[in-house]
Length: 189
Image 1 (cartoon, rainbow, N blue to C red):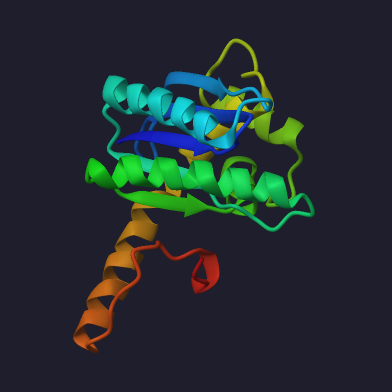
Image 2: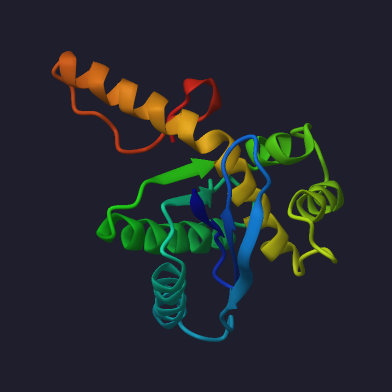
């Protein structure tokens, strides 16, 4: 499975593409960061991110998209920018018929390091090791995107099957199913 993972951000947006299947060695395809100047208007910044993200989608032809779930933060402008970038990525994926799964930072840390409380250095060290990289990916946004891709390779298919089962059950009850994927513990976004 080829996963394109995004650590969304308006100033720095980490992107990682990883090939792998659970139980087998993972392979790095490409990693990078899209940067936009904070002095530019938000619509321009989102257009730059969309254009570059479109190139990544076209170049790598992913089978699944993983995005880090936005979490509440004291800096509202950061949360809003992150949510806007998330929307751009979701729209691009939807137009290509690609499944999108959102993973929480705690879920990603636990999948990659074994602890949901791991710090950035531990996660980066594990990403470097799991992908057999000669050096740690920099900046942190790039390492975070790769951790997200690894998490998705290992956990995404199970979450996708759970979401499909929930949608089937909702349809049987005559309810409209959510298109969002369930999070650990069954909570919805």
